[in-house]
Image (tube, rainbow, N blue to C red; front, side, top):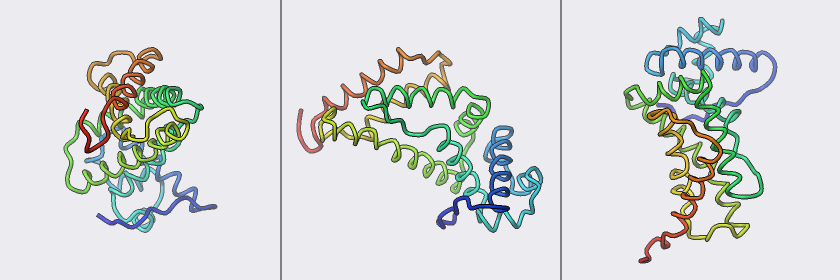
Length: 202
């Protein structure tokens, strides 16, 4: 899979082509999942030539990754409420809103249900790595405010908070309301704060 950085939107016709291709990609992902999506189908639905897509994205995997990243950047922006608890709850609400929307639900379920080939697995890893890395800023701000000890592992805290949300959205289908988000935020913060720094015993 190409490691060439994906070109971001520019103006004029290029922006219109990008918007049409991204929209078509997301629609097809929701309808049939990532393993059945083809550049030819995207081009037909977007009303552009296949060569235009290959010129910008090079591979199907880069197109899927870029389209999903753009959607998540819009719908899952990292909140800044002034407190870690507020940030986590706000992020959880955005995840729930995304995961229960028709498109978001279809994308999340298709990615969870389909087997990966090597390129798709790398794209999936890169997508989640980018999302998690971006959200870690919430913990770094909390450390700067004195809400978290410096030794807390930001990634572990974030994963402990996000995982129960996806568990309910994908598996049990139980509701995820504000009180539940507050509870798992408190548990995640308390649990990671209680852990000793790496290399030290409790």
